[in-house]
Amino acid sequence: MLLRRTGSALAAVLAALAMNAVAEEPAGDPSESVVRILALGDAGRQYFGSGVVIAHQTVATNCHVIRKARRVRISSDGAVLLATAQKVAADRDLCILTVPGLQAPVAKIGATRTLAPGDAVRAIGFPVGRPGRTQGEVVGLFELHDGFTVQSTAYFSHGASGGGLFDDTGALVGILTFFRIAEGQAPAYFAIPVEWIEFVRALASEEIAPIDAGIPFWATRIDEQPIFLRAAALELAGRWDEMLEVARSWTRDEPFDPNAWRALAKAAELNGDRAAADMAFKRARVLDLTAH
Image (cartoon, rainbow, N blue to C red; front, side):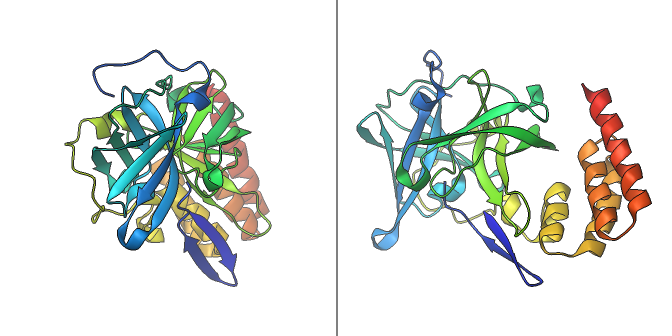
């Protein structure tokens, strides 16, 4: 998703970027496990994205990549195959496809709980339909369900959604999902946790068909989004007073989360309260040090 501040309005644009029992040996090069996805919808419409092989003949991707698809084609190492079934967790924006005949190596599976801010990561996908990889580092880790949504500086763009975020050992730690950009601020790139894969694998399989229900957690109304995204969205919109209230609520609810105190520090500074900003920043530093 691309959010851009225009005046006082917050414009949201979805970026259609973009384990079965029999497993294969993990890929030596993580890019070997990343595939290109072409979703075919009504009236000949095409939607491009990426996916990651997470088990034998099994691909994880974002639901928004295949949301309008009636057929899904997977391209890997010159072969083009059709997905025959899907498992859908639309609110988490994670779907798993069954792809008979797929021979691509299985990604080495990591964990977001092993990450820390500053760790090196790689984003690998098919931006604008061509292979691409970028280097970056972890900026923030935001606990959500059974893992951490990862914010990093590893750039990705249209067509890379559903691709993989890999750590410095080549292990898959997240699925590239959305990004936010505001004038005068560094872009923020987000990957959903690799830990969510197990949740989706336990769901029932469905035939390939358009996904009618469920909105991704990051694309709902601001007041329905996880608190870390609400704070970021209010900042992008220039709604400093509301951001301050959300940040205060965040520190009350999660007093040991350094992200909450960093948000409070930024909100206080934007509202002209330097003393409160300094206090919150110091608290975040202490929590960062005690966490590692």
